[in-house]
Length: 161
Image (cartoon, rainbow, N blue to C red; front, side, top):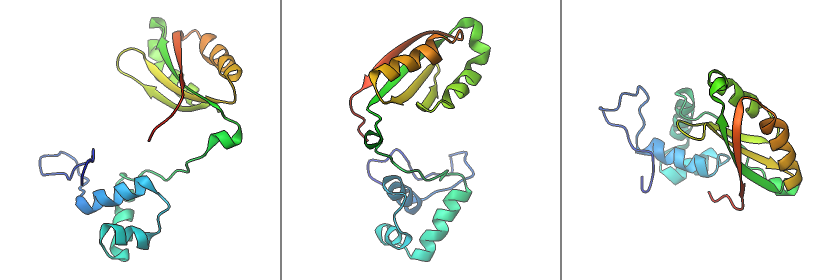
């Protein structure tokens, strides 16, 4: 597979899940369009539809495919501001780092939470309807939380995929 982060696994890889070039081609196509019909997916990767369906099921059973997601145009729903917020956790709250991250993850404005090794401790992607809503979110959920010692907010102009 050209220009792929994924590679066919060899015997030296200590992983019980084995994939080959056909599996990687299936994964690549599904990552582009998870709704691709099985017969088109099979034709694209050059295998029979029944074989393709079996491989997709096997990749799901093995835990390689963990779900299918809808890409939503949030602008059409009134969400106009996206931001990444770096969060430093207070030294006295280090034992609550993961629980604090999980609490943030439950908030409707929060799209993703990354727990990092190093500084910052957390990186939080949020989506709001306005800059005022973003400021309110930061004040209410980050600035007022004693577990967090500081934050830095960066506005996302464009997300390229």
